[in-house]
Image (cartoon, rainbow, N blue to C red; front, side, top):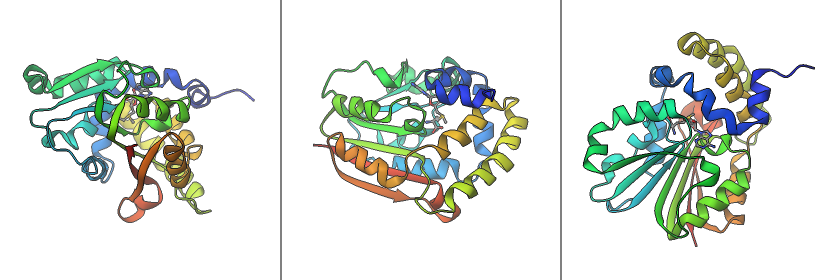
Length: 242
Ligand SMILES: C[S@@+](CC[C@H](N)C(=O)[O-])C[C@H]1O[C@@H](n2cnc3c(N)ncnc32)[C@H](O)[C@@H]1O
């Protein structure tokens, strides 16, 4: 059977950021139409217990909507917004031009699988809708663990389907029946959204993520639900480096 564009992206996740280039200028509008998108991010961003002076990485920051979820907590500290899509970072750079000038935010084009930071150098990491896009979840979590300082915090926010029989069929109906057609009309590109549905269907469930975090050396791992119907599809995770 011939592979679809979504299959090709799924099998070659390192090219996913380049696909995001095609939808970057429509991304904020498309997500603003998704009920609770920013509120869910804000809820997860607040799981980072920040004092204000930390070095925080927003890994897979996209256009910076995830950065907005905790930015107001940073006073003397600094946020480095990391993504491997030039297009998504260009939108983030425009959004945060004032904070970039002030030195509060830095924008960095990097592959999240090979982050260029020293061991034990970062206070906190936020990764929203990023882990699912990694070609190797375990290697990615291992790298995040390496660069965090002991006691450093990791918060992950992603689609992770609750481990009940009806979660996958409901997600497939919502995804292929509504999200793909709607987002294709809004953004003019179907590939990344068809890939989204497939990547969620194949991603880890919440307890598998929790086990993976513990396996890679994190402690105090907690799983957080989102309200109403979204509790079936979205979860957040907070973990501390031992
Ligand atoms: C769904 S967007 C999420 C953006 C943002 N965190 C938010 O919550 O709105 C996923 C982002 O992950 C980025 N991404 C995917 N794979 C990546 C990789 N290997 N390295 C860096 N960024 C990656 C994409 O370019 C895209 O901007």
